[in-house]
Image (cartoon, rainbow, N blue to C red):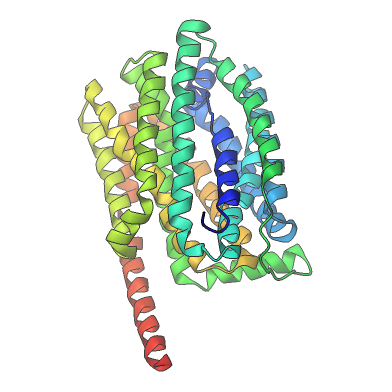
Length: 407
């Protein structure tokens, strides 16, 4: 057994329990039943992201100061509470409140999750395995998500017809169980500089991001790709249930299929990155996403559902690959702060854009809105990849110079 495998397996267990998400295919359908339009659905969801704008960076600062494990515990409890309130909601303002609590949970989880894994591997002298091990954790999550989606579909189609709220309420209970699994985790013991105040810590973390063009480009690229992935995620169930006229169990089964394919792709993230390299890996992610969105618009029949498979492949590869590149360029005392700054920038951009595309989807249709989104993201993504290629070349030249000097 490799050093630290028991600790990594506990992390996998934590990820497995917290990923039994019965609600995943049905939360938008539940909200859509009680709201008048996709526009209002995106307004409710924007409350989630607005909350993250406010709390994400403070949560990251707390993660670097107080440790990764407390952040995961607080996050999972708040996450479960948000799910419960969302499942009990029927009014616009209730959905808003639930999303605020839900988002606060996500803030703490984000500030603890990736930094916890990377610092654990750093302590074990296995940091080079980060992409592979995080990808395996994503695969574990995918399997559990897939099983949960099928169970959720059976629950609302056969056992308790139309009771979409039960998928959220039951998942809240499972989420609380997941918070108990956090207690089994071991806080990574790596040296981190202790800052005198959060203000100094934030300033130092922001300078770390601002002065590194490679990190800025990677964060910006993540934002571009995840904008497309998330808007598709919000519209996916509505698109499948209304546009393609699939029943609940079919939606659950297809979600399971998407997740299995995505999980299998995640297990190969390390190999994909190794074979494509730092340049072509990001090109693959962007072009696959843009091509899939175009096909969603062009293919009007039910066969268009197949396009969701490459979209899920991208969604399961983008985090291990880009986070691996970012963490390689960030030291431990800034890790949670930099991750939270990246999440803050993403949410700051997403909140208004999601509302805008909710309006477009209401006026023109979901397929048309996705085509407009792809057209808007394409030039930005292509520009970022051009800059990234130059950064990789500069890094390689610097590494060769250092090697020659050492000789």
